[in-house]
Length: 378
Image (cartoon, rainbow, N blue to C red; front, side):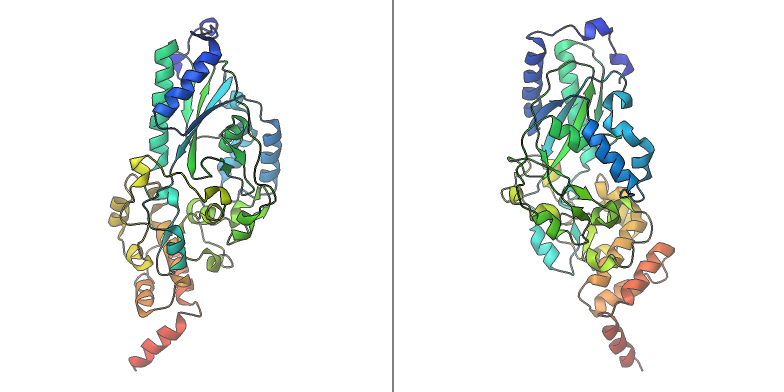
């Protein structure tokens, strides 16, 4: 909690003008004025979700995300994470970039790089935190100092569980939150607070018998409805995973170099995606919606840092960026240009990059071109 905004408990519990329900209604209105698509309020009891989290961790499905195990059950206990928390204000901010080149076209063209739609614009952490801070300040303007803390995928918080509890949507079988109005193309953020606001009513689930997301997962990471083995998830492998990508999974990654959207792209609730109104998300940076693998693989480290400034992509670093692109080039339609691009980094200073480049050059569909080129020089 903000120490400078921690009032006397008796004062904190004094109902504001119009009561707590009136304040909740105003918070919803202020949130919409700030551009949020929806605002909800959840309590702090997440017992059922905690059991699921513990089982997921015990199964080892978090892979190398040690921070998930390190914080353990605290993720499901908001009042333990931030002492004094009584409610969690949840917020949804749409990010679907309607002006970007069609996702299906990028995935169908093996020579192009596929970047998850959420990463085509500005880093969402910065946008969401700033917007939530403004909402928190608006509440303070109305009722005076109160204890609160803002989160946006930046702490051990069960975002989907809290959003579902607060009525922003329901958990889909791919484990993401789904909304009848917005599908799943949105970010979530939270304000932990000691204000005793009335909680929002949850909504019913509407996935029915549909399992399109499970069937669409390229690596079979969605092992059953609502059960995701992150170790097989392309988003995990290309973003969170720091080491060598398991060889048996590399061919399944295709041309996805940062994240994966397949389970969302096939979801019926996303057929009429709500285009974002946020310029930071709508604007595609550096042509990443249509860039070729060879073009991106040719970036120097300085170019990578410059071209990903203010982007979520920068967090994976240059080494992982090249690793991911090497895998994608190994899966790409073979050509002399792709061979030359890979060969140019065969002696890369990074052992991780060299390993994945060697794998790509050794792919069966590339070797015939390499052989032809070699014969032409003899």
